[in-house]
Image (cartoon, rainbow, N blue to C red; front, side, top):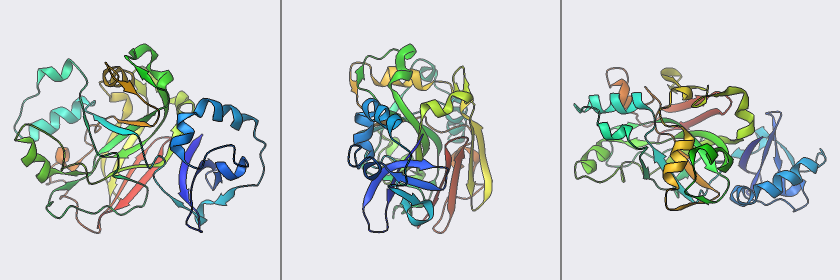
Length: 302
């Protein structure tokens, strides 16, 4: 299923799912109040709620045309947000652009940083360029949402802890990021102003037909002002989401609603491509990320 969070014409925010890619269903209204109003509550108890959904009759209650609602981030309030560094090509190319060699430690463990889980943006939402930023960049990523609590999760068991997947754009103020990371900490202010996810959260069963050894065969693209700049595939990921979950849960609990990003696919940002291919993003630019089976995610810079 494709789960969404949306705003109705009366201003109320509801969780639901897509129907025929033309309608959204308000899960709370369609279930006469059995299902929750928000997506985090659904994820937290999704086993029970999915069983209930399978018995829910197909009626017209709570059905809204996609044209008459505003899609928000499918999970507007994740419990936490860890972003990994899982694509080898991105790491190599990004370091080369700064005159750095590949560090051998990267091959030892999947690494991540914490970003701002309270700065989540949704599809078509305007992204404000930070005042001190002149080098604004997009990052083409895929993310998973954790659906079950667990600690010390082994990679071979990790799939059962995943609720679903979505597109993620890890906006980056490269000039701010570069300066702060010279001190030996970060990224922090270079990242925490905005992260976009959406347009919907796809349950993992929807991706089974694309499964390959290290994940899924999903084409990933990024366009700026309708010009194709980035193209990659999730199958090229070096560390699988299972390995990321094993690392993230080492000695600590993961909780339903935790968001885990893959890091940028190879060629998936201007930092890698170089400003001779495209300048840094400016107000008025529209960025569109698209991933097979996960939809299209657009935002405009202001």
